[in-house]
Length: 363
Image 1 (cartoon, rainbow, N blue to C red):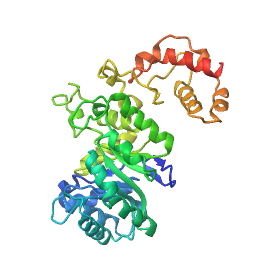
Image 2: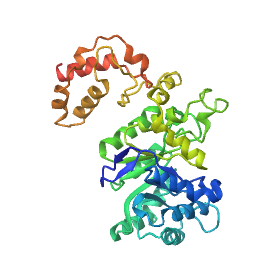
Image 3: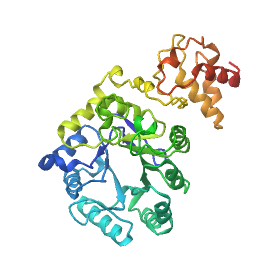
Image 4: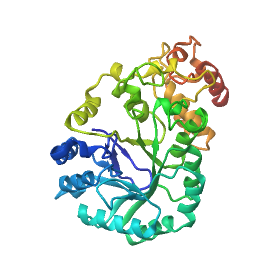
């Protein structure tokens, strides 16, 4: 397992987390699935579940090992019955949170999320209707450590991020949605990419949901691209997005868990998602996200770092120029062979960019 640090707080979060949405399908084995995930180093669990039983399974698995996992608790997910419900009623939300804390045997939630904010009217209601204030109060009391939210819409996400109190948010990330394909492919290509970059720049983490687009990307017959990707390609794609700390695939049983954890044993070739270059819209000229799919460079340029230091310098980082100068080779050493552009999944015009960077730094 690998871990990434939450910028605002410093907690180390496993890059693969556990989505509990379909955990109930494991039946009596659900507790064992969660225990196996914890034993493998998974330490981040999302509790937006389709069934009350999934929350109870997580509670049983965590008995006596609270410190082994951080929990993402959704304020607005309702479990009055056996099935998931959605609400903005504050009394129901308070009652559900109390039930979750008692069931899980917890005194606090690591992450308290405004649940599924997807339209402007709902965003207004969340901010002015008392729910955000309730989370603020819980945080002041120490009953919630971090405030976050979940959404599928980049414009709504920006509205909530603007409050300046968000440490982590849950967003639907995969190559289909990023290229405006599928039900939740909301937002123009560049607007979605810009959201990821801005989150990274401002220290807001992303927990990524729907890495397989509900399974569509894994099946050529229903894939919006007409071609299947592998789970490992999808997971690597998500983890390469700026700002992403953890990806939360839904796990239905032990086989699902083993398949997901196989990502860490997969070769670079098995994780390589450069094939999505074929699917990119004609107008989707991207920005470098330092994924290094363009490597190796025939000239041995570290293309990702060159781009990163340039972006940091343009954003006002005073140390970036010094870091750039210490590189063995610089943008001015580019031979314009075009190898990187043929490999880039995002159609970045790296040869033009190398000229731009060389002019900026003078080397």
